[in-house]
Image: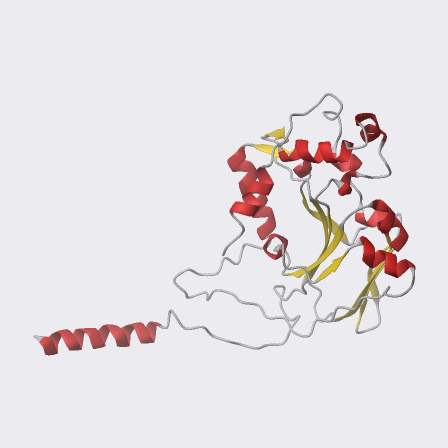
Length: 283
């Protein structure tokens, strides 16, 4: 009997070994040869805990509320206070600082072939960045990433007007590097953190240049033949996550009106923040 049990156990162990379901595989191949070969995306986020992202040019609507108008508006979006008559007509997008229009002087990318692509300067129509995330604390822009066969990027340059940012009273400028469509995962893992003090130094020309080098990129995917296979159709994880939150809550916060879900009413309480802090994306 013992011998029979032993042989059965050996058989199952050998079978599990040859199924190879729990073994990782590592492979190397030429980059930029398939559409899934995408460069990392760069996201730039303005962040303020005290309503600084709403202090756009001392907006007249906030002046009518009082000197703490931006903080009161932020607290309303967070659900801490009820919407007052003075704040109910304020639209998030109209009073929020715009990273490029208000602070950026020029942006461009240069390929190894010497071509200048994805340029931005004031009044550029085809914007190389898009609005990727907004809430009462953050407003983020992310570089669009597209596949171009055999196109190798050499460098990217972003010039920010230091005096404009310093005078804006925004507390932080955060830079993230992440896989396209996965900005939410990287919150709290920024690769560069700039404060008003950083821009003050730049104004004094003591430290006005930052260089970020990408030495290696590793992509971890679940195996196609694994027990839980990789979802190849999931290209924008951030979008899926946001839409799932909106569907579950049943309305769209004022700061998420850039999401097109016309079936739901607008709301102004802290739905996105709660879900972000209590249920961060895990996969």
